[in-house]
Image (cartoon, rainbow over all chains, first blue to last red; front, top):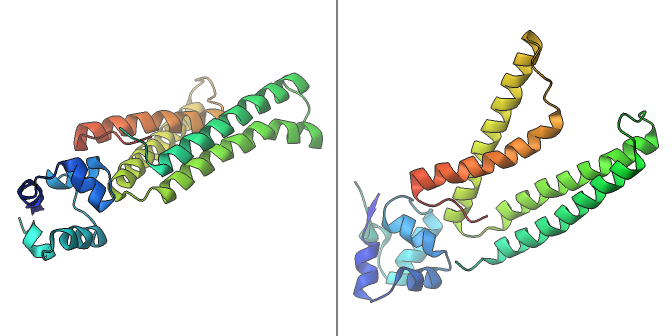
Length: 63
Length: 136
């Protein structure tokens, strides 16, 4: 699944580590989600959406 | 990379269990000559290292349940599944070899060490397919 996480993170000038800290996950997780190697669970997707104050479908896109 | 709390607890438990395992092996080795008759006392002493191995398995299980990071948990579970597949494959295929040929017998003691070796294979598969080996 594609996502806009890298763009959203760059807009806020956050490193992967910054985002990982805010989401309380590892930097490996952020990297895996950003690069599309791992699709987050629904609860984590909601946490990501809440953090960016967006809807899940505004962050995660259908292929 | 900083360790998360689950990793710290896992490593602490593994160290305690490892010391217990080595002590139990020495105790059993010093009290029981090889091939001792199976009496309730000898069986109880010989099972002490086995209890430590159960401790290893318990620590691994606790680690899986205490890992809150879902991606890291996925990596660890994938490693365990690959290790299980490898251990079952080796034990079953070698067992069949033992039935039909005169290959040396593989003591069942080796199943858990083979499983642990499988964790390393699992980490390599994770690294090749996802770019991350895992965290333990």
